[in-house]
Image (cartoon, rainbow, N blue to C red; front, side, top):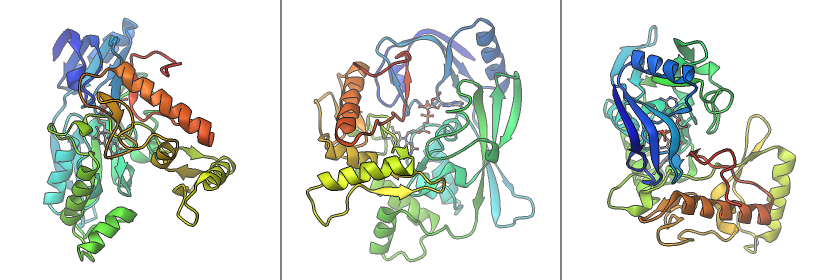
Length: 364
Ligand SMILES: Cc1cc2nc3c(=O)[nH]c(=O)nc-3n(C[C@H](O)[C@H](O)[C@H](O)COP(=O)(O)OP(=O)(O)OC[C@H]3O[C@@H](n4cnc5c(N)ncnc54)[C@H](O)[C@@H]3O)c2cc1C
């Protein structure tokens, strides 16, 4: 365990912004996580878990509490009982995610190939049910090992108990601040990968003449699509200094969504062209494309200043090109939220954790 005081958080995040944490604990073992959180709770110290910092915006004032960073490492494989075609991969929370995906793909294992190139660590993947290109971790997640601060016990939760859905989970919604994820299990397949369902990815594979693509081919196609959008970390590309998508795609009750769709169609001057992309969900709600709403509300790619702006490659990402501030990111995000609401009547919610901003982060 390493204990640090007044520690700069910006270098620990992909945005590269924000102030210091009053205290930061780097923890390498499960028992260290348990005793650290127990002590923090006893002392009533505010605390938060930080992984690879790729889905967090830290306030310029920093965080007046303790950051807990689980650096647990280790990967194990075992045959899934009674299923010769399946393998269970067990990975500790501090393992880098995209390296794990690349290793699985290299072994010919299918199930995570569309999730390559996503930054961050394994332990964060269940928090927002990480997903991309038609795949999400809930498709293959089996169990999640946690330290439960409420019971002061280490426990294993089946994935089915974790309320995993689009960018949401038990950990994020029903019980924030209760669990520290210590490790995660996935069931992967040695069979051919399922045919990708995502339109852009399918088109890319079809154009390359790949009728039954292997996990490796799919993984490479995904990385190439992601690179073009600045969605793979690249130290030489300032358009990648972000938290990925800054806003969630809104999921609205059908009647509300229909009203937005009608408004969008009425305002769309491109008669006969497809309008606001949307998807009907199993629970009856409708998911709307936030990127479309943002662009149509006047915040297209490249909008904003030079230090902080909408990515030139991806309308859903706010990027920090250097010399910016968390305040500037939040001001731009507030402007976009207001603009989208004024035009379409929808409030966009942020995807990253806004750390140290207090209960009402939006700039008024
Ligand atoms: C360029 C770029 C592209 C991205 N593309 C995608 C994408 O395609 N799909 C997608 O879903 N996301 C994407 N993201 C967002 C991000 O990479 C993922 O959400 C990732 O899983 C976050 O991992 P992390 O370790 O960096 O978590 P952090 O940013 O450190 O933390 C994120 C949240 O998880 C919590 N947390 C982290 N670790 C633990 C733990 N062990 N136990 C309990 N809570 C924990 C934190 O408290 C915080 O609330 C992208 C980000 C970037 C910068």
